[in-house]
Length: 133
View 1: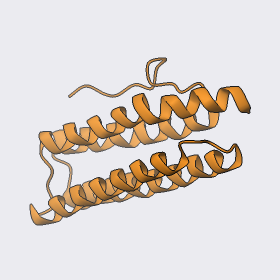
View 2: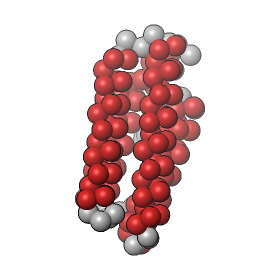
View 3: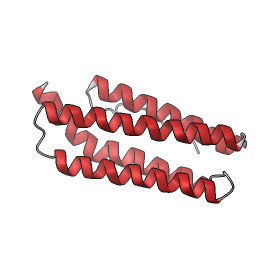
View 4: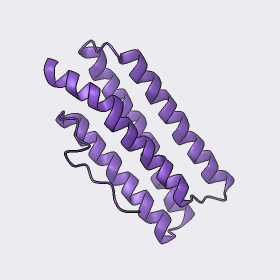
């Protein structure tokens, strides 16, 4: 699988959110390469933990901005965040059940939820914040 790149396609045009997304993409790419290269399960576990922690922090960051700028879709966006965190934790449980291993399909599903969220809910948020900030 090729690396994700935070280019104009994935940019929400809000620097602080794009900076967060850039870090998440970097962690995703590290995880992807680690799975492909057969790195140690402990290293993959550390990357997965960091990705989930950074994602949770990023979601709180977005939610703070949505609250500050009275974003009408806060409740729905926050619910999507919760679903995504639950999905990531489910992936983590799969990792543990499979003797600390992830498949290419697991990585693809992670890529789909990361890019899907950015291209959907986050693009709408970025448009809104671009008008009010």
